[in-house]
Image 1 (tube, rainbow, N blue to C red):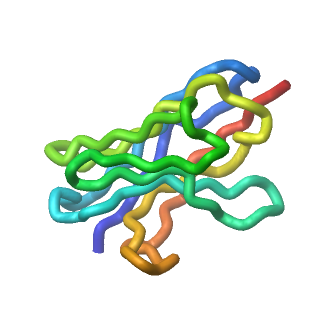
Image 2: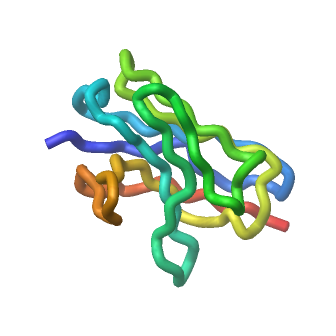
Length: 119
């Protein structure tokens, strides 16, 4: 079972930037889609961005134009570059592999990484 470890979160002022990393313990080369999710305080987990094996990307409307997802299959890594951060981006961020046509994911959830944006 592949394990996912997220890192790179922290406390940042509004307008700042952070880059999150997700390290997979096994190969993600054959995984079509990888994604970042987030869970704001007191709310449900939501999909933030996805990237296919061919590097096609999709973003939630709330982050489009500010966040960039990327992947390095050789290193089994997925990244999320976050710019122009807003207080509403405050959440625990997770990575995983969404299963096409469902709301399910392939792997067990990691511990996530906390992002806190101060106003």
